[in-house]
Image (cartoon, rainbow, N blue to C red; front, side):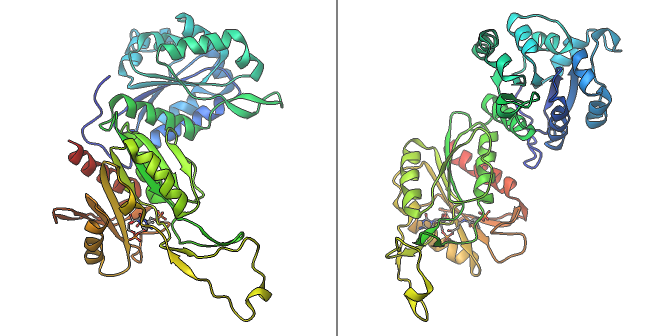
Length: 407
Ligand code: PMT
């Protein structure tokens, strides 16, 4: 497969990629329109090929409008000679979603029954299939054998998912959600061509909740967005990613190994294990510096505290300073004033290779925002001021500097 484009746009993770989307006949075809749209939004050039059965569920015009390109159903009706070979050759990846049982059987046996299976036979690009069918068809030994054959050949299989099926029954057979299909494709392309292939990157994200009693806690306003964006960026670049997350309301990025924790004590244990073989640790989490000394084992009632309540706090361990391993060590500094000066103090104390300082009181930066404006301070004193950018782009900027150090 070709190397990824040199000019990477962190906010368009599939820019420079030509993705061929194969659509076969299933009631879930409507989701394929969303997949095409999401691929475009991620920056990919998208070309759609369909089976005649798929056109009974959704019009080629829908895909033509979404992708800005002609849709090929009948290889003999296109202006392009040898359309199946030309489409297949253009592909950086071939995604078949939905893939019916019949499509899987044709793929497994090398049948060139239609434009979708013809393209699959003719391409050398990685293939990802997202099956969708009734659960009994999915569980049939013939389908399972076909899927095993495809997996052995290196075809990536996403889903099917458990849920409500067209028949009204619940079972394994639903097409994966469009975001999952796109996440799986980004993971696959990262694994094939990413510059962090073979590396293990550990990221922490979110706050910790230190219990006062079973219903109350000491915490902070971190949402996990910064850490999750870094994890996704590392995944896109082919790294094996472990994400240790405090209590946050975010979906796991596809392909990332997520470990949920609640307290600093749990985060420390999880990170000690995860960093044993890590090439890099990025501490984007906001662990609580203090925890209640004696958490109550029952809900504190107003009467318990009379007119008020005094909670004694003790200091939590400093996780990153405690960790022995981790490879390249990256910390964050969340400050509201004297940003660079405070961050510089943390650098040696936490034995970091570099620290990413953000002013959490500045507009568009810090907690809960989609963007961040950071200063990167290196252990040799070099300082880089980056402009306001998406958290995903900040993630890539951090990974670029990690890669330099790994090299
Ligand atoms: O999650 P978001 O809503 O997207 O917000 C992102 C963020 C503001 C939380 C993030 O960008 C950030 O600044 N994370 C670090 C928050 C923090 O705890 O900063 P600090 O200056 O208190 O700590 C310095 C470093 O030591 C951090 O890397 C921190 O993870 C680490 N630390 C802190 C305390 C502790 N007990 N153990 C630690 O390892």
